[in-house]
Image 1 (cartoon, rainbow, N blue to C red):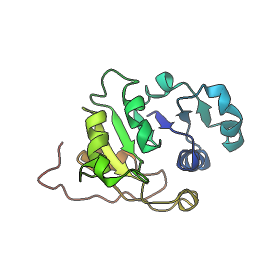
Image 2 (image 1 turned 60 degrees about the horizontal axis):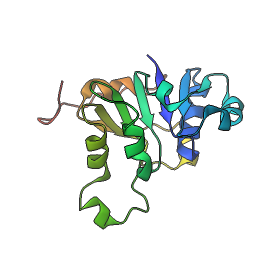
Image 3 (image 1 turned 60 degrees about the vertical axis):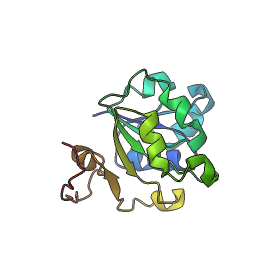
Image 4 (image 1 turned 180 degrees about the horizontal axis):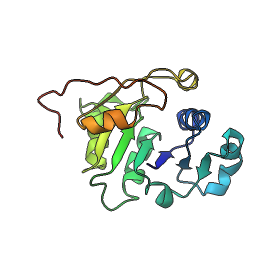
Length: 167
């Protein structure tokens, strides 16, 4: 299983540190060239591999940890997200409610990453809390993803399937 974190701000780096603490290799990418954040990645650990956005989105599971305004740019980096697993870590913090037309921000992510297996998680935690390896709730229609993104060493919580859940 391969992992990538798109976005290397506070949340992206906190996620990268969690991967490194557990000895799991993860690619990290931004819209910038990897050389621009290579030193920050190296400071976290050898498990963290700076990549271009194009390289990173080839991972089996992609953690989307970018500013809400950057979602469309990331989504356009791949012609089709069909079958990809995307963990949406974003928040619409600072986005005027009228821009969301009364919809939850996850609807915009689902539209942008059409065809992806979307999982919402980690977005309810500050980077400082995430850095402490908390137990994390995730939600999604794709039950197989809920188990896949459970951090190593943590007990998976099996949720019962709702009528809206997909196989």
